[in-house]
Length: 193
Image (cartoon, rainbow, N blue to C red; front, side, top):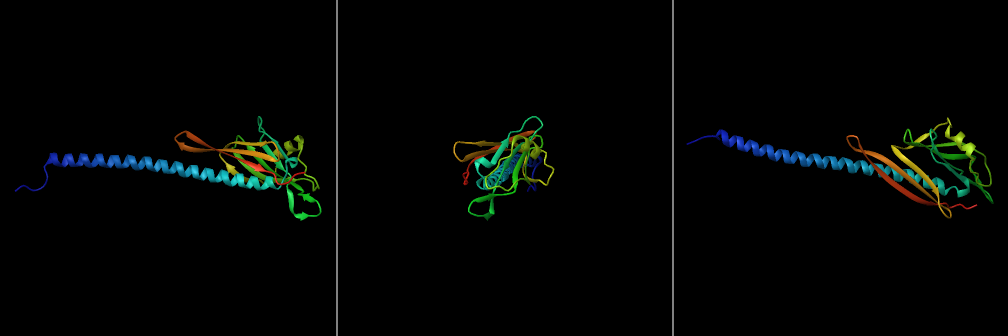
């Protein structure tokens, strides 16, 4: 009686095992890549949603007359300055905060930063002038990062008390490949002056 396997049988079994392992490895590798890509997209969309929600809460505390936007130009960041209604000080007429809440988008750094700068407490909303927007662009005060890897930031005042904000965020999907997640939101101003 013969014991064990012959050399050709062992080679055939080894070859079949290697083939099955190769198929399993390729399938798991592509699944892992797809899962990583989808989780990156989910994280990017969450980051954009969070940023848009925060921006919406600021714009709803302002009005179109208290908002100024300057698009990015050569070497200059985009600036969105908002004069917000003071939520605490409410007399017969609303008062506006003694500062501007600003967003600065730098295309070179691909960052959207939030900061406040001194302004004047008024009974009417006051948007900064173009010269003041230039000063705000170079504001040296404390700034907080809202979003990184942004490829674009747009603000458009539409008809009526409505603004549209669009954010585009780049995510890496492979070697030297990026995909852009684009999201926009229409925001309705609650305050009218």
